[in-house]
Image (cartoon, rainbow, N blue to C red; front, side, top):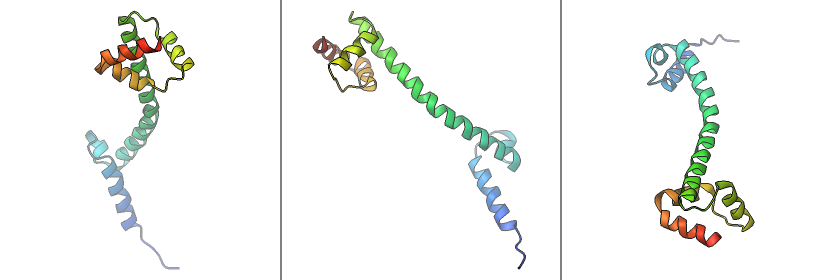
Length: 115
């Protein structure tokens, strides 16, 4: 079997790693070993924080809806969501929070109709 040198593939791998680490600070953007380590850590954090991001947005929507409901003297958030579910209203929290933030008069009309 003929011998195959690894230079071409090693160079390709090195370029790929450094390209992924482009823009990283200090040696992590220029040195292969540090870049590899930084990429692995970045991937771990990216995976974990995609889940956290969803959680944070849901909390934001809940807070916005609750604030708008209390401003209208409707009552607590939990009772409002329970009413929505019992009446089979298809509006989700994201839409409701956007209405509460950007169009309070529309939100108020929607809430009054549900009562």
